[in-house]
Image (tube, rainbow, N blue to C red; front, side, top):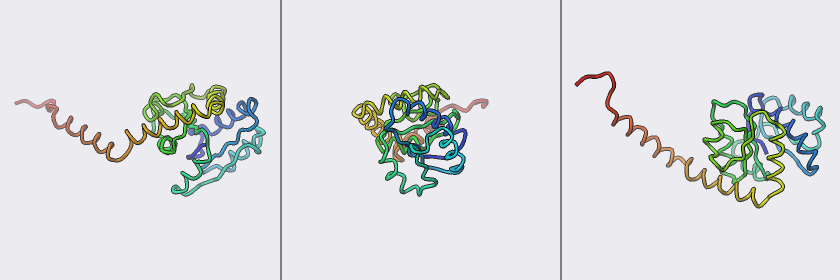
Length: 182
């Protein structure tokens, strides 16, 4: 499953290319891609790649319905190639207890820690192989997903975020001011 914007920097074209490799190994794979805009562009790309029967594009879905859609998946994917901005979809995946395959970027590592399955950015064959590995090992994938859920509840709930922010303020307030003399 994929949830998020359908844009080039999100790596949707790379996900579709990886799906071609994945389907060479496993014909039983179906991709559920939730998001907008550019649905028609990526549907056309899927058709050109021979994936139309294996990919469902939902278009935009209401945020409150996202968990129901994510629950349909066995593995979540984050093919984002941008290395400098947040990736809220990872928190959704983690909260749902889904194992996650992501491009190896600092942002992905910050969210997923050692529980993410990482592949080199842009490497569609490695992305396909990582997805295949998780699909071939449902128990291992479930265990990894549960560990990600635990990570999400430990590090990313609002009370925890509040504690971290307070700690940062405390540290700032305790530092001596630079450039001032006594």
